[in-house]
Amino acid sequence: MNQVLMIVMAAGAVLGGVDRLRGNKWGFGDKFESGFMMLGSMALSMAGMICLTPVLAQGLEQVIVPFYRLIGVDPAMFGSLLAIDMGGYPLARDLAEDPLLGSYAGLVAASIFGCTIVFTIPIGMGMIPRADRPLFAQGIMLGLAAMPVGLVVGGLFCGLSPLACLHQNLPVLVLALLLLLGLWKIPDKLVRGFCLLAEGIRWLVTIGLVLAAVESMTGWSPLPGMAPIEEAMATVSSIGVVLLGSLPAAELVRRLLVRPFAWLGERLGMKPQSLTAMLVGLVSALPTLSMFPDMDDRGKVAAGAFLVSGTSLLAAHMAFTISTEPQMLAAVIAAKLSGALAAVLLALCLHRKAA
Image 1 (tube, rainbow, N blue to C red):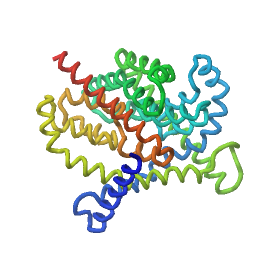
Image 2 (cartoon, rainbow, N blue to C red):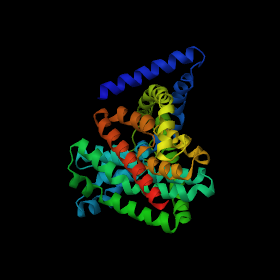
Image 3 (tube, one colour):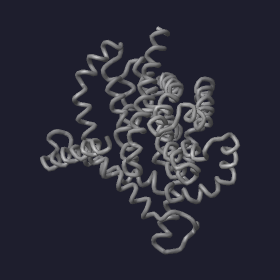
Image 4 (cartoon, rainbow, N blue to C red):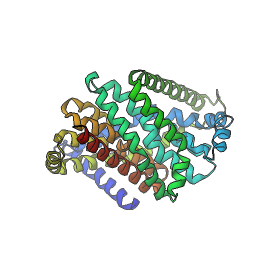
């Protein structure tokens, strides 16, 4: 399966590259360029954290490891509280006592729960008009409620039992429950807290990037134990290579599904824009969030639910997985798609009952 997907990505790169040479006549050349242009933003958000991870892991071992051992959970699961490409993966791998759980926490759980905490909620609440925020929050709550489906399915693809998946995700599920209550009772305060968290991560990433750059250019290590910035940039570059093909391929899929989505939208009682927004969300949450004013209320709830598990699957998360542990790609795809579909079905069923 991994080889097939890599061939599809390579075909997407050829399609985008040829169209770029033709002057972007088909609209795929821009996607090809966008994939490469994302290297800068990815490096800013990822490189500093990758460099800092060994130091953070050493500090967390004194607090996190004993607590997680006490409840029988691998410390790697702490990494799932950060996004896959914002430190979640390297932190999970460094804290892991079982390498398999390190991969599961850093790639599967971090791409769902971690991404929701540090990206989807703070960015979404900042971009979406105030009038639509309650619908978005309702969607996030439903997405979190359906999240165990994706976590278990992803675990099964890793070779874990359903009971083991639920046990290892115990801290994640408890935090998800607290998030549900917070979004229900104090949404504004909770969102402000997440915005502060996102800003704190931005500071940490920037500091790590500065320290790593100083060490690389002078040979002096301001913070001993950091990973070399060259290693971090190699990870970012490998992700950018995959994005060269994944973005044109995703755009081709979107175009092919425009008419089927219009037909399906009529039968589900949603505007076609709502289904298109979800499909676009598989590439990035940002275009989906920008399309919220054009959606109907039912679609806004469903799209918010979809983003919890589905966001960035066909772009950053797939590219990151291929560049680090390609054998985990099937687990990541299965986890994110099953969680996203379960969330949408839950949203549609509850909305129908409410209506």
